[in-house]
Figure 1 (cartoon, protein in one colour):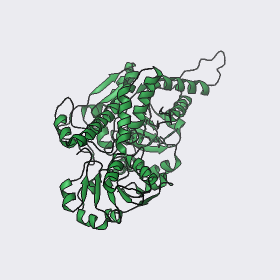
Figure 2 (cartoon, rainbow, N blue to C red):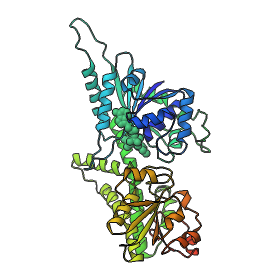
Figure 3 (cartoon, rainbow, N blue to C red):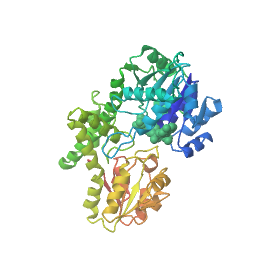
Figure 4 (cartoon, helix red, strand yellow):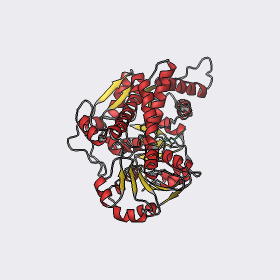
Length: 463
Ligand SMILES: NC(=O)c1ccc[n+]([C@@H]2O[C@H](COP(=O)([O-])OP(=O)(O)OC[C@H]3O[C@@H](n4cnc5c(N)ncnc54)[C@H](O)[C@@H]3O)[C@@H](O)[C@H]2O)c1
């Protein structure tokens, strides 16, 4: 099938490469000239495991191309994916301006040659499907010449469907090939059938897995969930809100564990074995971050507000997370008493391992707070030092290349991102570099035994 994907960020680029791998002719449209230039040379401008190789496979096969010509690309396609960003505005509402521009432009590019499906993959609030339909129609109307009385124009035909994306940064390719489910929201039977056909190789798992994303053992058919538009949109927000709530729940229990002398890791194991609860997303630590959870929970609360519907669970989910990010500061104060004049080394900057994404990263909140309190901050991340420096030129951090450089003259180290690189270090060497051998394990990811055997003081979260 001829596909056009608009927006070549994490979601758009992975979607494009995945659909190209399945034998579709895909044009990924990107408006950022630097990003487009880089992609046109086969260079992925952000870090995502395997994506560089994956994109190269697409380009070499001839199935994946890049362009900044939205109109031309839309005209060629039968299915048009919208995969642009929907970041939060300061008031918590999602900024839908990128979607608005793109939807109108799609409309302007439409002609009557075929019936097109406009697929909303960007995460948007309930009701956006109808709104996108209106914008596409406006684009169509604006681009139509006023017909002479006697001529009858062939009106472009399209349908808008919702196809929320559930991939996780850090495992985006695997998530795309082996998803838990594919959700398509539309009441148009024909559009649903086309979408089902597009995803058939994934639903039936009939494609040959690429070497960098092998099929998990025993992985079978993928559920294809058909809903109405509003339900598909709400599924995406609810899924993220639920996952964020699970982490916040664990963090709330972690605080209680510290009071009563329990260990939140043991508690999480004990409750996670109950299949109704499940083990995933019960890790206590410095809390959730990233480009999706915060903005999606806020957007969900905003939708509820429009209907004067209170959402105390969502509010608590956010409040617990905000408090949790600062628990490491409290622990540093308990151990070091005064933070003014101290040097703290942050292990990790990205919001989670295996990505260089710094959007809403807890490390930034912690760094700003430490600096505000008069401490010096050093940091070392395996992939996002440079990006952090470029995006936060006013953040007064000393960036380090290795763990010993980071530890040198530090009064404490704080594990913020649980990269594998940090899990088994030569702790004795690390301790030797430090002024005061204190380690705050903000992710409960390190071996307390290994750290304390090296003569360091270890503090986890909720233990
Ligand atoms: N990142 C994730 O893990 C993830 C997961 C699931 C869903 N989502 C959702 O998917 C959407 C995209 O997220 P992302 O992380 O890929 O965003 P992103 O910001 O990384 O990428 C968006 C891309 O769209 C491009 N763009 C913007 N306007 C354009 C235009 N007019 N024409 C062409 N390109 C344009 C931008 O330059 C950018 O490269 C968001 O709504 C997000 O909430 C993201």
